[in-house]
Image 1 (cartoon, rainbow, N blue to C red):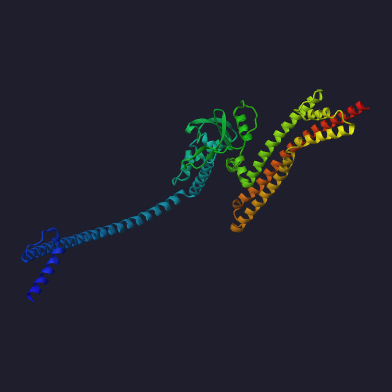
Image 2: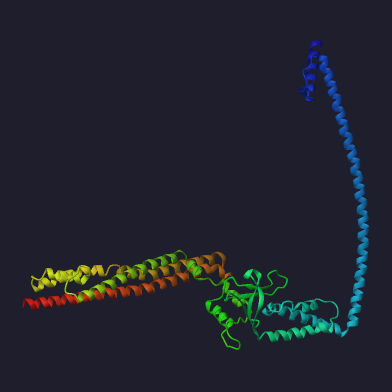
Length: 459
């Protein structure tokens, strides 16, 4: 029994020793040494736990001190806030009293100066929105300050209203050229700017005229003149160039935007030729490809027929037949059948002409077919574009017209491209066919003459 208890005690002691980190020590030589180590580890663990407990109690006391300090500061700030609130209310009452006193002393002048401030604000906004301010920057600053002032304006400040109004009226009839900065052009350097009253302005760099827009918000970073990324049509730019290069007192045609900018700005949304072609979609690309292929082939055939016509005309003036042209080959057929009777000769010449006819009419049916297919492809694009449009209407309704713009653009552009392709192809086919018929007619005339001459010789 005692032996069993000793073994149990040793096992328990061994477990405690293992959990206390006995693996880092050498194995005990006896049970007494193991018991000594266990007691030592127990004392060290108790001391460590006591140190942690003391540290926790110290932190709790310090946290309580911090909490008391924070509560004291909160009470102090609450008292200060109450004092400031009372002071604010007292000041607000004093301000209201002073404002009532000011209104009483102003009397009828208060309404007058209120109207003056309103007029100053309206005139200042009009001047800031005018292109003329690009020539005279800062001329509306005094009016803006007057419109926001709470004190009675002076006589000089009131004079700004009517003086700036008269200056604006005078400058509206002027067409002048001056130096100004245009954002997006010449790296912000001064360039020549021509102003047509308050309606339009364009810059001139290296004799290249470009229209500019006026940004009317003085608080914006883009305030001032800015170059239009997409310029108006060439006739507008040409008119601006003529105006810039005109002599003094010379009457020329210019560009006037009565909306003072928005109408010219609309041109940035007008699609160019490449964008319009892209609106045609896949069907439009097919039509353009057909036009390029057919027109190239038609022009080549026209040049070939013109060459053959020239060769035939040259052969008419020669008695010796040549294999390089249709008439020469017909003449060679005549020479080979001179010993035949008239009917045989006529059949031989008809056979020679029939051999030349396919060569002359080669490709004409293709041109005719391409001229007929092009409008049909345009109609196909119109149908597909309208299908897209009705699909958009079904999905999104008709509230926003821009949603339907893609389908309508495709429908209209394919129709235009189909007609543009068909018209020149019809002309090319007509000219090529006329050249071929001209050569055939010459061959038939010469063949008839050969038959007549042969009949005379035989008779």
